[in-house]
Length: 280
View 1 (cartoon, rainbow, N blue to C red):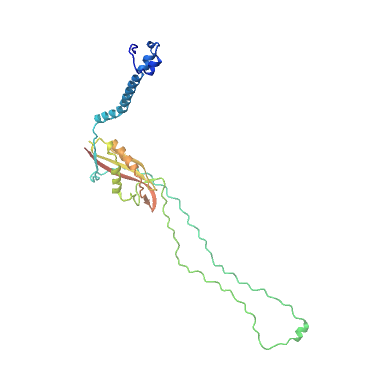
View 2 (cartoon, one colour):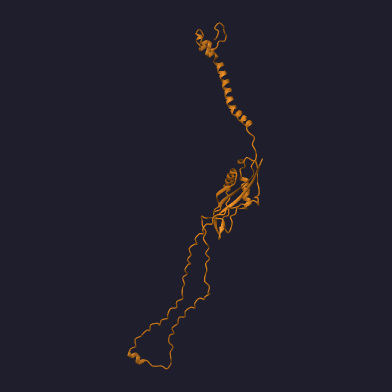
């Protein structure tokens, strides 16, 4: 509250306005203390804003300090052990497919040389000359040659070689059946070692804990007639390793050269054993 007994040589605007008025009502005191209240409010608001801005960075720093150290796993693709042979369960023999229906040989039209039968030209009968002309004619002693008619000579028959044309008919292969025995195996561009390098480079080792040691599995898939692979499966004791092997092989987009039977592309099944060693 302002003291009215003190005289000020330079009165402020508020003192001039509230001169000889009731200064105890509160308006005079409120307007006098307004700059101080405004300054305190600005300082407190600035401090609160700074705290809100810095708090996320402090929280992130605390999280980084308390985070666990990452464990790096070293994985190396090993060669397939030759002594571990894969024993396949013998499959029940399926009845052989019925033989294809006999293919009808194309009929060849035989054109025979038909010799037309020669026919005599119709005889032209000329009317006898009148009697007056007949009396004027004289008989001669010299023979005169008549008009010769050409005779038709048929062409000679074609020479016979005594051989009959044979057409080789290849057995038709199925577009949907998956073959295990083929004439030409399916092949990856660059060979199977190039395919193994792609599997090793795309394998995510973070799915493994790192203390498994040597892990093995067998991956089977179908190489389609267009070179793509489908029906990828892995049969091994470690489910995490099987799942990652299937994901890695499905992610390889390079197309294979399909297997062939009688020179025709067919669907075939491919088996690929994988062995990896995991250690800290």
